[in-house]
Length: 334
Ligand SMILES: C[S@@+](CC[C@H](N)C(=O)[O-])C[C@H]1O[C@@H](n2cnc3c(N)ncnc32)[C@H](O)[C@@H]1O
Image (cartoon, rainbow, N blue to C red; front, side):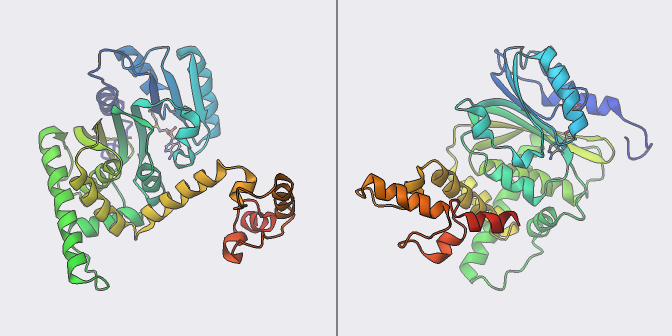
């Protein structure tokens, strides 16, 4: 819907979609990640433009069950192979879905504001894209009740004073923020087409945060940025990924993000990595049995642990939330 006329603005959305799924590559993408919505319009447009073809593996995401049913019916007729994730995008474990494949084109038509949950998901996107992947997002650029975006707005405009940090750290933060601002502005200068109020502080904050989140694991360049109106003003940002070389700008992006997320981005992705590593191990390894322990003893440790008995070498604090501890799991689900 157009904010001014309160009418659905299909034309503007269509133009943004066409740009988002346009590819300069000669061959269709092998893996496409998208949020097709009830009409699967982005998938149809990508097929029409040759960005994907019927052999492309489509990873579709939809949180609304009725819409997911519609997507499933249509995808069956559009492509040969797909995976439909029926939940919010930040619960999608791409590595598990891809099984070694990599995404070379993505259009995450979220039309929502960039919040902390989404930021965590984007920050953790590692080894899922090809080195030359194209990734486009659409975001709503109104963020009043969004803690993450409000923090980005404050930080990027130099409105935060960090009394708990020493002078050196404060200078580093300031430098990182200035650098992110400069890089993003420079990239936007060549590519952006803005149509609304130039003082919209959430627009720049959203784009800068998205760029910084993608820069955590990739070298990224904004190749297109288009503003349009749906129910509220939206922005479509398209990134071109390339081989990671620029460590300085990604380090600065990292400092900038960690500050606005109160350090939770790094902590969460580290915990996730640790958990994924532990889950791949055999139960006796997860419980830390010595390698040279006889097999029968290892088996007993596992049996007892599954009954809730802590291995004697494990600290109570580690045991409390250990995945094998049934009491810990019960507490978690309660
Ligand atoms: C704007 S529509 C997609 C339109 C489609 N891509 C097109 O080109 O016309 C966004 C769809 O994604 C779903 N969606 C939005 N945010 C989501 C999220 N965070 N997780 C999962 N689904 C989401 C919505 O329910 C909606 O069906």
